[in-house]
Image 1 (cartoon, rainbow, N blue to C red):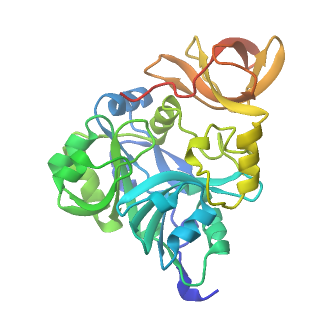
Image 2 (tube, rainbow, N blue to C red):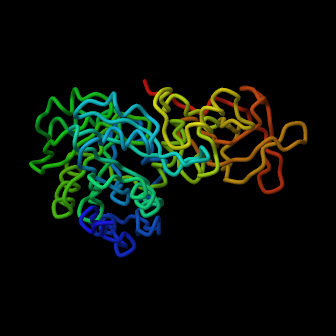
Image 3 (cartoon, helix red, strand yellow):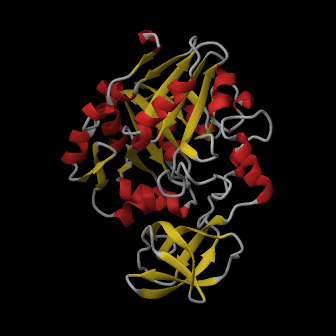
Amino acid sequence: MPENRYSFAMADALKVTALHGSHVGLGARMVPFAGYDMPVQYQSVIAEAKSVREAVGMFDVSHMARLQFRGPNLVEFLEKVSVNDVAKLEDGRGHYSFLPNPTGGVVDDIIIYRVTADEFHMVVNASNHEKDVAWLLASLPADITLTDTTAETSMIAVQGPKAAETLAALGAPAEFFRDAPLFGYAVASVAGIETLAARSGYTGEDGFELVVANEHAVALWDALVAAGVKPCGLASRDTLRVEAGLPLYGHELTDDLNPIAAGLGWVIRKERPFIGWDAIQSARESGTPTKLQGIRLGTKRLLMPGMAVQLDGETIGEICSGVYSPVLDCGIGFAYLRSDVKLKTEVTVDIRGQAEPATVVSKRFLKNK
C-alpha cells in the first residue's frame, strides 16, 4: 500500500482534546472515555439535559473520528462499504448510515457528508476509530485517498431548540444556520471562526456540529459560552440519545447483531448490494429472533446493560442501555426482546435480585416537535 494514500496521527497518543483546559476550568468531572479524558458532567446531568431540551447546550465531541476521502468513483466505493443511498446525496448534504460486515453485523454507525463528487467526509465513533480505519483501508481503491483529520481538528455539538437562532446571531452566512436542511453541510463562520458546520447531532433536538482547527477551538467554545450556550457532559448526552431512541455502537449495535433487529431497515437501501447484503436482506424478509424495544419503569430506578427482562417468570431479553429520563421522570432503557413481544406488554426487570415492574414501549421515548 503506497504511503501517500493515507495520513493518520495515532489516536492513542492524544489523551486530551484541545478543549480539555476549558473543561477543567469550568469544574467538569473528567472520566476516561475511548482513550480521552472527557467531561462526564459539569454540575447536574439533569440540568444539562433540560438545557438541551428547552434551550441550547453544547458538547465537546472532538473524540469522535473525522475522515476525508478524495478521488474518483467515491460513490461506488462508499456504497460498497456503507448501507444508505450515497448516490442520492447532493453536494453539501449528508446522512446517517453504518458500515456492515460480511455476516450482516455492524462494524460501526457513521455519518457521511458529500462535499463534491470527488470529496466526501465521514464521522465515526471514537471507540472504533482505528478499527474503522483498518476496515475501510481493506477495501480502499488505489486512486482514493483517506485522510484522518481527528488529531488536528475539534468538534463541538451545539444542540437544542435555540441552537439555530444562537448560531445565526453569531455566524455567517446566518441563513445557513436558519435554513439548512437536516444533515446540511457547509463551510460557515461562527464568531469569526471558520468551521465545517453540519445540521446534525445525537440528542433528538435541532442543532449543529461544528468542526474547527484545534488552534481556534477554545476561542469558539468561549464565544458560545458567552452567547449563553450551556456546556454539557457525556452523561447528559447519553440521557438525551436514549430519550430520543437513538442506538449506540457497543450497546444496541454490535458486529454480531443484524441491524434489522435494531429497527434500522429505514437506513438501508433496497437496491445495489453492499458488504453483508445477503444476510441483511434475509433478515429483512424473514425477520429476526429478537427486536429492539423500549422499556419504561414506573420508578426512578436505573436500568443497566445486562439486566434480564422477564415475562411470566421467563427471561425474554436483556437491557442494553438505561438512563434516568428527566423529562419522563422515570427510568427508561433499550432491550433486545423476543420478536413476538408486543408493545404495552407488562414485564419485570431483574434489578439486583428484585423484580421491578416495567412496560414495553416504543424505543422513541420522546418525539421531537
